[in-house]
Amino acid sequence: MLVYIRAPYTRVPASSYQGVAFVMSVENNQRPFLYQRLYDYVLDEVRAGRLSTGDRVPSEMELAQLFGVSRITSKKALQTLNRDGVVERIVGKGSFVAAQLPALERLSSPDAAPRARRPGRSCIGVVLPAFSPAFEIGLLEGVEARAAELGLNLIVRRTHGRQDVEEQVIDSLMNSELVDGLIVFAVNGEYHNRSLLRLVLDRVPLVLADRALNGIAACAVTTDNHAAALELTRKLLAMGHKHLAFVSAPVNNTTSLEDRLEGFRSAFAHRGRSETQHVLTTLRSTPNMPGVSGDTDADRRAIAQLLDEHPEITAFVAAEYQFAVLMHEVLASVGRLDRRTIACFDMPDLPFAPYDFLHVRQDERAMGRLAVDLLVAQVENDAVPPVSTAPYAIVDLRRTASGSAQD
Image (cartoon, rainbow, N blue to C red; front, side, top):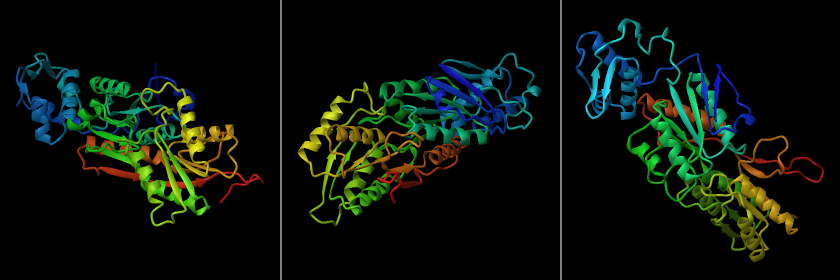
């Protein structure tokens, strides 16, 4: 299902996040992208007579080398020239000045202020595993707000936490010829999908949200997950807990989870032998894991086994909010909630959240805004850092017997 939204700025309610994709169109304050400079170059060559009807136009590779840009940028310029009737593209041969040219004087520069942009220009794609209130909706709100300020269009797609769907979605967006770059919140997994690798190799403007990719030089915006997990665990230790457990999905090749686990472990450095750490990283009932049916029985059994084998554990660090909820439910079912503390990442900011956990609050809205700026910089051929970080805070919303929040 497609939902089209046209407004200078539109906040999309959570109830609208049920379709497979939606597009946000913005009419004001449009910002030109780099491919439009290449468009101008070829158009000016035709106007000046340096390129005549039937002449071969520089190829994608030649334009990319001439301007020092990625091939997706030069491809977009040639596609736009073809759409406007300036060039004809012949498969296997290249692009040529059209036999029947349009009225060139009516083709104003894409950079000119009076030009009315056609739908689809200055468009970025956003790929998410789900529309979870714990993280993704905040990230999307940040992306949408910044895109609205810059006059950009958005196409948003979700992958349902499956890598095969993620690959299909990325291929579909890039083949659509609609987007100038992608912001991708990649699915957890031991291996990266081939489409992401192709984006990096082809120098497609790309920003990875929430995590980097091991061994791949792609721009990423994330939280300092190591520092956040270290601070969270140290707080539990300072509260007097001596036996702690870290619970998460498999961490292999998911940098955010790897960093959170390493931060948890680092908190025990230089501490006494009376304090112990335990690790359970086999849980899979989360919407950001591939091939998950939603059945939590296996995870409940794994948590129950951890509790049976180590009844001394009194504090838990859950790498994701869903696992904190599951941990709470299992502890309640076996009557072991008393004097036990659950901490996690990304508790949703909802007025009627079922549980109040000590948690790391990532600033996903700031992350989304920064991701847009980094993507636009790449499209315009500006240098960007490999990894940028957004702020976080440790928040304690747990309630005392009197009903007041703890410090």
